[in-house]
Length: 253
Length: 292
Ligand SMILES: Cc1cc2nc3c(=O)[nH]c(=O)nc-3n(C[C@H](O)[C@H](O)[C@H](O)COP(=O)(O)OP(=O)(O)OC[C@H]3O[C@@H](n4cnc5c(N)ncnc54)[C@H](O)[C@@H]3O)c2cc1C
Ligand code: SF4
Ligand code: SF4
Ligand code: SF4
Image 1: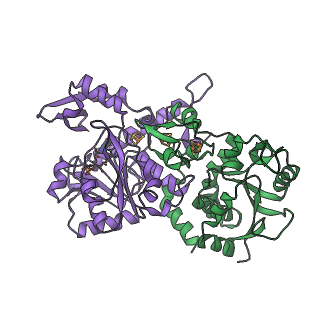
Image 2: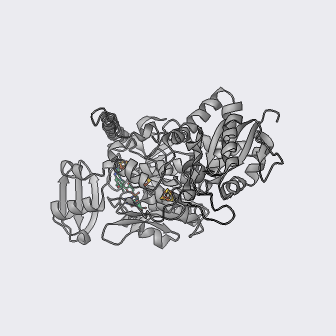
Image 3: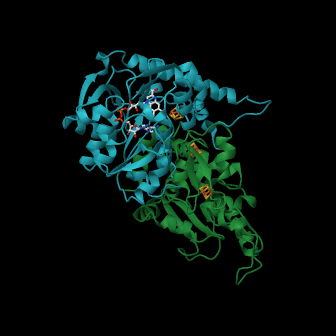
């Protein structure tokens, strides 16, 4: 297919788990690369030294502000990419790199790590640690529809991506505490349990139906709040789940 | 068809043909019967149900992989069971590839959001094979229901045989045959606050949804909604699992369901709007407008 979008994977201070999550789409990833997207940049996957112009940059990891090259590359990513997607907890919120304080061998002076949104404007968030392969897949398909689809497909993609764009606008701090601040304290929690299911470190249990976060365990990945139906629930998208899942499934055949 | 009753392919009044299920069921035993059929046919290899918890009438999400386990979960517990909390664990610790889940309308919303936006639900989206929704006007915390039963109805929790909300009242049936009814104006203040912004009454996003309203005692109203739900429901009917009657031929029928759904959604929509001007130029959050 001639009309592919160009995508790059930009690796900041992350553990490569996000890239592995992308790869965990297996056949689906091959279909995406075959039909919809050309991978124009990626440390491990594409033999390109400098960040080229691209439609979508998938950024993994936070930025070490003591590392000049990283700072330069994230700024360059913003210049070169039409859409910047923060993939994973570290790029969105700092995640475990929030707890870094330097002193590690090789580069002990590298101690300050910031979510990419503290340095550049970010368009779309995919929180989580590791981010879920299927959400990365869905966002890739929707990004393609947004840039190359017909009018209806563009409408759908806009609606689908809207809450993930709003998450990017919401800010660069996340914690299990968000469930208290923005859900329970706001009188919105209805006890579904999604937050506990989403937590990668099992920091959340339910006490009489309401989330109880073990704050010592929380790594600040942002998955719980984003998964909560009372953080966002878009009636123009979710009730169409059957048709949308069919469409994504068909796109990856 | 859409609107306050959601999209559906079919609506009937039904009850299980299995006497053992009917004996323990809240209404027509639709949930337990349909899961039993799906388990036996290998359509699911386990179902997340609200099983018995640590205190009387306190449910907890429980993964039933056998019919015996399933049977222990029948009946409505009017307090929160965070059903979705086990949805990823079901595919991991329990190794299920084909999951069934029952829940309230909000929990069905959580399941579908989780399939379309699986932020922390790796490898779950294609494993949900039967999502059964139950109608829901409101839910309670355990402490609320305990206060209603013990302080208002003056019964011990462990002595209760069944609880029910219907015909405008909250009913508590004791093991010894005693019945206490409380008017809903007593129960209202104990409702879970999060229910007051809920815009779904009949689990519009389930594969199959069911509740008592609309059908005669002992029968259930059933909406078959998705292609998948339709497929499983037709197989269950062909296997003789359910007796059915056209919804048009039962009383009070769809008219009452529509009326209650409209009342709930209108009232809660108003609450959502009032939250926008709750403080002095300060709004409470509106999840339907986004995560900010
Ligand atoms: C909080 C609540 C409010 C309800 N409000 C209404 C209403 O306004 N109108 C109406 O028509 N019906 C309502 N129902 C549904 C109704 O009470 C029955 O649960 C439904 O008709 C199913 O009956 P059944 O005989 O088919 O299921 P059964 O075979 O008896 O099985 C019931 C199933 O529901 C599950 N369950 C029980 N309690 C809970 C819970 N707290 N959370 C999640 N799952 C649970 C059990 O695990 C079991 O699998 C409500 C249910 C609940 C839990
Ligand atoms: S509680 Fe869990 S899911 Fe939520 S931010 Fe912390 S680690 Fe992530
Ligand atoms: S996901 Fe949200 S609504 Fe559901 S239990 Fe957690 S905080 Fe409450
Ligand atoms: S009223 Fe709505 S929010 Fe409350 S338990 Fe029922 S479905 Fe959930």
